[in-house]
Length: 315
Ligand code: TXA
Ligand code: MG
Image (cartoon, rainbow, N blue to C red):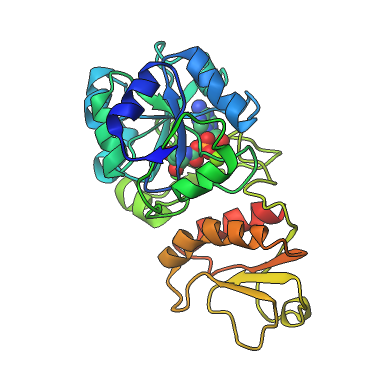
């Protein structure tokens, strides 16, 4: 069921159940982070392997209450960007069960910016663990309806906070080396915004052979239909598509032939493109087309994160 009942969401979470929550990035599938059984339920519902750790979500009160110890650099970043699309990987305190971090020494911590979810967190006495609310490997959900379509049977309640503001997952910064923060996932917060606060940062974007963030596989965010990615519109396979294809890109030239056109942003606005991306990928998938063809967006700002998702969707 979908609704806006915070008391219901609260009592379900207190009873160890699963509740989908809106955030400014994507919808999450939440459970009490301190309850291993409840957390196990998340892995089962998503069909997610247990080597792929979950992000723990807090509100200002919960951050204080549990006295998470943050390296200096992390403290600086969260002062600037929380609540917001930033996850920091910091040493796991003992009260966070190992299942949450897949046995890794670090835990991902984030304070989401969505007012409904912040209000819910302020009502709880425990932080919540929440991965994106999609089946493992599929595109992340940016509306309550997306969650219902795929996980409606597995979740006990879906808190509806409207379409996600940003539309891409949080940027993840690892403090494995507290003195040398390192970006391990591109996301809703731009690299330049982070570097403005802590100076030049290392980047170790995860892939299969370098799994700094274990869930970040080469093939991820994948549609059911095959997706081909091109760097430009200027390719014969893009210009000459026939019936049964969908094209996804920004400012698609009118000369491109495709049965379905998903224009991420007509005006070339990368934030608008980010907001539309996952929704359009799902829609294209639902059309039952033979192939989705995507064209990379300008590789700057949040465009870098969009291109990262497109590359993984292409596998
Ligand atoms: O925006 C977001 O971050 C959304 C919303 C719901 O908060 N959540 C999200 O979670 O994208 P998820 O589980 O789909 O992706 C989190 C990824 C994991 O796949 C993993 O790669 C990395 O974060 N991660 C989480 N905890 C980690 C840890 N302790 N060590 C290394 N990587 C970690
Ligand atoms: Mg995910």
